[in-house]
Length: 110
Image 1 (cartoon, rainbow, N blue to C red):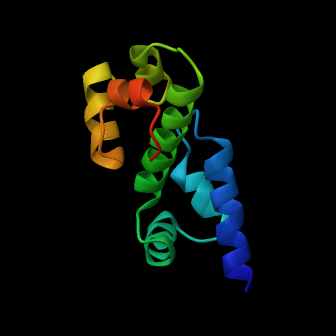
Image 2 (cartoon, rainbow, N blue to C red):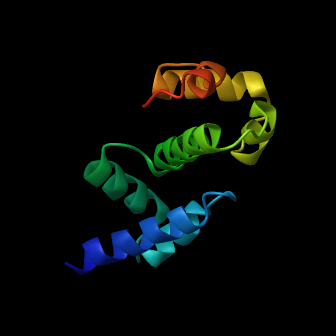
């Protein structure tokens, strides 16, 4: 049961650091395992790698911000760790099935 508690603490760390680049070695340390063991266990428990989890969470936060603000898409791209609006739009479209500009205009749900 301690391992689940430690994994939850590591996820809390990832969540608290979504706006920066979370240090996966630090997350592994919080879980009291090596980085490789953390990645394997995290993948087993969640069905995705820690890096994929961070990417998906950032894109979900970006979707919320698209819906609730008028922040330019290029600014959101930079805020959520993308080098360009095009790269952000591709990633957003792969995850949510719609381009960020279309999502903002339609106000649809994901």
